[in-house]
Image 1 (cartoon, chains in turn brown, blue):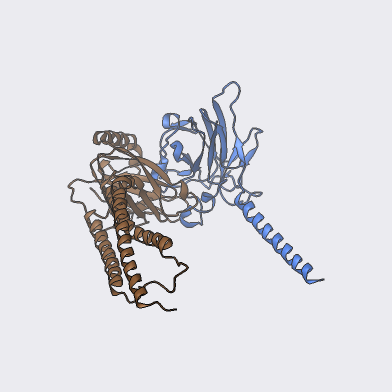
Image 2: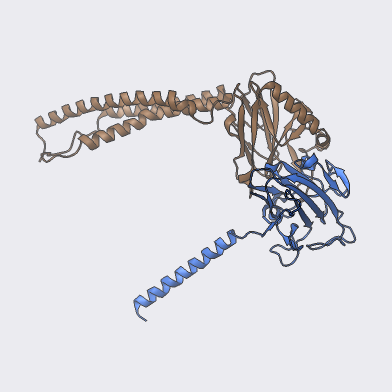
Amino acid sequence: MAMTEAEMRERKEYAKKAGWKIFAIWLVLSLIGVALVLYVWGPHMPPGDMTTSAASQQFDFKVLTAMVVPVLLMVWVYGAWSLINFHATKTDRGDGIPLRGNRRVQGIWYVASAALVLFLAGFGTYELINGNGVGSGEGPSPIWKPTAKHMLVVQVIAQQWRFTYRWPQFGGMETTSIDLPANTTIQFDVTSLDVIHDFWAYQLGVKADANPDVNNVAYTTTSNQLGRFTVRCDELCGIWHGAMYNYGHVVSKSAFYTWASNMEAQNASVTKLLPPFATTYTPSYSGAGGGYYPSYDPNGHAVTY
Amino acid sequence: MNKGARISIVLVSAAVAVGLILFGIFGYLRTYPPTVVFTPSPTQPHTVDVTLQVAPDVGPGHAHPSWPGWFAKNAQGKWVQTTLYQVPERTYVHVTVYEYDSGGPLRNPIWGKITGTVGNDAVLNGKTVSLLNAAQGFGVGHTIVAPALNLSVPVWGLSGNEKTFCQTGPCTLSNAHNVETFTFYTGNHPHNYRWQCFIPCGAGYLNGNGGPMATTGYMAGFWKVVA
């Protein structure tokens, strides 16, 4: 049986009131949820704030999550309200007010979705530029470079199945461990001697693919937060991929220079055996053994910082 | 034969086939080389002696006879082809390696430096060394590198043209060889410490790092440090 005009008006009135109530509940819960995300959960979100790129990534996660909360709550509040109130009663004689053709509702939905997506596109782009790549590998010719005059260059050499590190500003020494000074801008030159690996310094918010014959540059600036960080290969690179990790430390500048000087002295003998520092190296593909040397030119192609 | 019996036969046959396939797969995946257990002598409770050799080919009777591989001498004095060695914690491990394989340059010369041993050195054919220049002489044959123990020891290789060059393992002292000894401390954290060779000696495989390099029992294994 069709509804009468009076019943229709009554339902419209009811729907209007319900809409405002849903909106009010959603607004209050959203404000609480966003505040909780920004001020309670946010500061503990990974990867922390050990570097500018890590802090930037944490900020991005906070913003994204804060934007998700109202959308999620809208669905949940409307769903809960519907389950509790929008069920048929014994005296019901028809459906509720149809949403189809309701231009206002449709308009709000389109505009809100478009605004959200466009904001995210703009925000993401701004964050990428503003954060000098936010710790990601930018390839051999990075377009977003830090403005710092002095940068510490650390070359990450991946090989099955271990990372080693070369330090062009410390005589080109190579180490199996990595320490970094606090409050310093770091340039990571990431490359590989064999297959594709991925250098992921989790707490530093730095992640760059290590490709053979490619120099993948990533930047970050350490904060004054000292501590340990984890380096992990994040590209399936063979049988011992899961074991390809090590730990590094962000230490005070004085502790770093002490460490670097000690390592330089300890490794002096083996440093003499290393090829000249270059951005990439080509190992021998003969199968067994074979040294690595600067790409394309065993006698040159050296780079100085 | 009625329909029910035929269906039963089909179902039972399918179940047996699936069972056999799963048994084969998991049997293969759970295949490990033996672990050689090294225990201290009553007179020297905190030291163990480990004797190893590297053969250019492990020889017939093994899964991959033409691959290079490591052998360990067990308590009965028998050579066992394996890379799994069990040693006690808080123990000095005296390792003697007989290298019977040829050498070559290291892909990364950093693995020529000896670290993690007592004194950060080793004794090669009676001479103390702390660094091997793999670009000279016959180069490095293989290496023992256990990252979590900071242990890295290159072992000097031979010329492949030696008259008495060993063809298949286990080799004997009558074959041309180098002897290298070193000692490392196991520490107080019982754990299975992964070790591998850093000479990409998987000839014929991508970058030389497949085959024996990627197979436990040949060029990769574990130091099992137990309480």
